[in-house]
Image 1: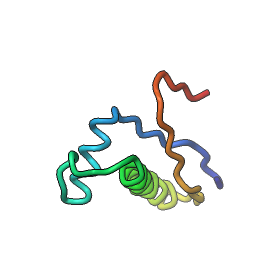
Image 2: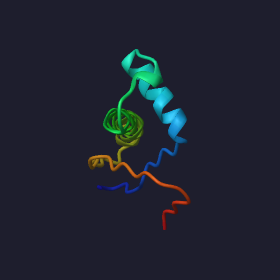
Image 3: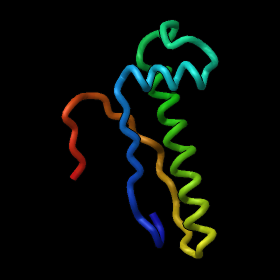
Image 4: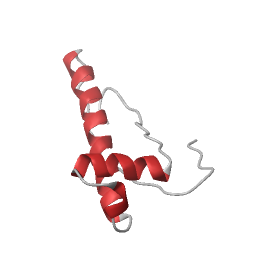
Length: 80
């Protein structure tokens, strides 16, 4: 929200999201239990990417705000 509005979407296969989570937590993906750890890690990754974009946009004179990340799971998802 602000002078610049948009959506940052990160889309990963489940196996790659688990791999990234394992790397972020310093543990093998096979040791992750359930979806909570993966959801949290992907939300944090989205925050890092969107926060970097927000900083660059703000440096160019267009301040904006970030909302909390949303995590969606499924297949054949479309954003309209």
